[in-house]
Amino acid sequence: MTYDFDRRIDRRHTRSYKWDQNDKLFGDSDVLSLWVADMDFLSPPAVQAVLEKRAALGVYGYAIRSNSYFDAIVNWFERRHGWSIDPKWISDSPSIVTTLSLAVELFSEPGSQVVLQSPVYYPFYDVIQGNGRIVAKNPLVLRNGRYEIDYDHLESLFQGGAKLLLLCSPHNPGGRVWEREELLRLGDLCLKHGVTVISDEIHCDLALSGHKHIPFASLSPELADITLTGLAATKTFNLPGLQTSYIVASNPSMKRKFDHRIKTLSLHMAHHFAQDAVEAAYNEGEAWLDEMLAYVEGNLSYTLAYFKEHLPEAKPLRPDGTYLLWIDCRDLGLTVSELKALMFKQAKVAFSEGSVFGTEGEGWLRINLACPRSIVEQALRQFVQAARNR
Ligand SMILES: Cc1ncc(COP(=O)(O)O)c(C=O)c1O
Image (cartoon, rainbow, N blue to C red):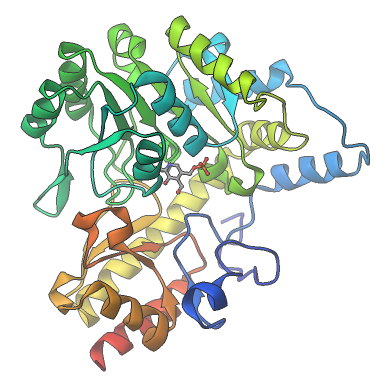
């Protein structure tokens, strides 16, 4: 390994969202944080180098985007995903959640139903409800330890008037990397019922071995025409604090509407640092990404084996992708508040408590495995010991 993912980096007192809120959120600064989806790893060295160079300018005036930034995105998707993107289809957005929220506002009517597939990353609910729309839930179905899409229920929601779908692909939590056939079947229903798709593909680069992410808009020109895809290098290369993402929309009318709204809100200006970091990550971070994924797979194998041996009542779903592990803890027989007390008070670990992803997540936990193995080992030891000593 070229990169040292074992190195423990103390992120406390760095204004870290994940590590500097333990007192406030969990009443204890000693809690081990494995919740928010960022990594406790250094970003690729090329990213740090370019940011240092940019910081050294000393003048932090308004910035523009260079063609090389768009080239880096286009080349990345061609190389890693076999998806040909025209740079004209790309626009920046401060974050994926910003994109989701603007898309709900632009591509659905006030008071209308917008579909999500639960359990799902909690801001999906916020952007629908906060924009005065109604959440139309298509709960995922658990079959043989794997989430699947309930197509019949999905179609009934479309028949009931829902015209917008927020797709999470790969899916968080649960780690499904949707397969071609699954996406095509979903796409057929969307085409049949005139449904627009906002595809959040922030986890696209995090497919684990044996799995391949398929960009929804790459499936056919017809599907590309009804889709706006939200993408970012932030999850892939651990840059989320830079607050940068982009959309890909080949449908000119959708792109125009999005750009107009971004401009109206004055969210269109380039960031002084972000575009350089993204460009360096895509152009020079590939080897880092492959090693990071291999390291996370090691953490995953360790965790699966640990639960099997020491706490078989907790049943993790083996993810196809993402560095997030979704664990069915319902057999521990604990209420939501008891599960929280077990984590935060007794075990002194913070995993994500499942009900925030929707009622289907009650009794589940999500562990972020993008951290040094020693943190995973320590957190599991503390959690299992506390669960055993109840
Ligand atoms: C599915 C999904 N979408 C979006 C985000 C957040 O993206 P951003 O910080 O760009 O809003 C996350 C972060 O965990 C996520 O899991």
